[in-house]
Image 1 (cartoon, rainbow, N blue to C red):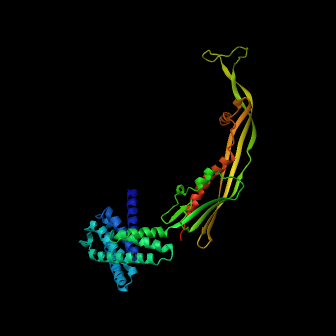
Image 2 (cartoon, rainbow, N blue to C red):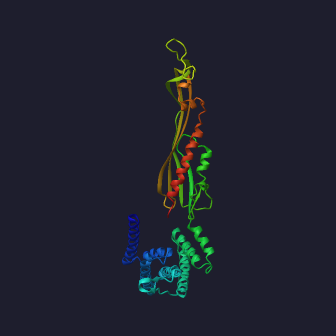
Image 3 (cartoon, rainbow, N blue to C red):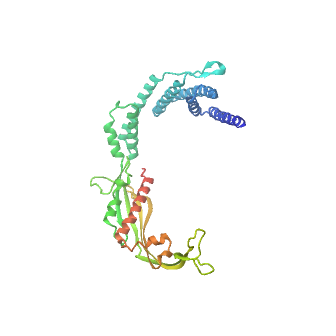
Length: 395
């Protein structure tokens, strides 16, 4: 019984805490927070007595939010700045959306006042259409102005974004397709990619091709194009250089380690003799036998084939218009070849199972220097892709 009372008390406290925070949101002017929290609770169970306070909060927050939004819209209209058209349109959309979220919950009864919650809904359709048309006209005109007087690729991107938004809110109302295509082409940053080798080692052709296959890196985005084979008539904005400045390959090494093992192992049995020198018998008359043990020894020889390759490079991004380095990143990678096998001398019963398994292996051929560089390059490709994705070009 006590546990039930405590549980009920905890639920009531949690409920009160939620209501208090929601009421506090109203007091701080965060009307949407209060509205969203109230709708969330009432959607689960609007007739629950514990949710009565959320009905009052929703009623209050909706009225205050609507009043503030309409006053702000009136101010923006009076200001006369066409750049405010988006805020006006968005405000009307949000007001209508909010009403559409509350309407399915109606009616909302307030039990202790014997009434239903009151919400003054408005039909914003005509005002929304006017706002949409004003915004559409502004977006189209502004995009064309940006295209005409663009001073940087950023202007073409802004024009594209305006037209993309226009198509989102008012699809097909304006001839945007050709302008968007032109804005996209003129807004792209074109990056020429080069690979250079300052070391005395040869970079495998297969690795070079894979490092220059930028499609596999998935770093081409909407506004950036990487070309590893420069186009003749293309003007490039940046040069990305992958410069190898270190390729180190260690000598082939075989390290030997000797381990000596001893163990007592079972080696047959012997009869137990009684005091008279006869074979002792158990209670059933059977001969009594005991295991015989002997100490065995084995010399275990472990061989480790070892070879490493280390690659070091520098990524440099140069702005071709200013001939200034925009960014430089060091990048490195390592590949380790290691193979273990073993031999033995003596009785291998003295060895643990993990050592016995190594006796089944033999020496293998070391990978060539070219293969080592290629294997190290596999990791380098991953690091390169990560670096480029984290440092996308932003003009």
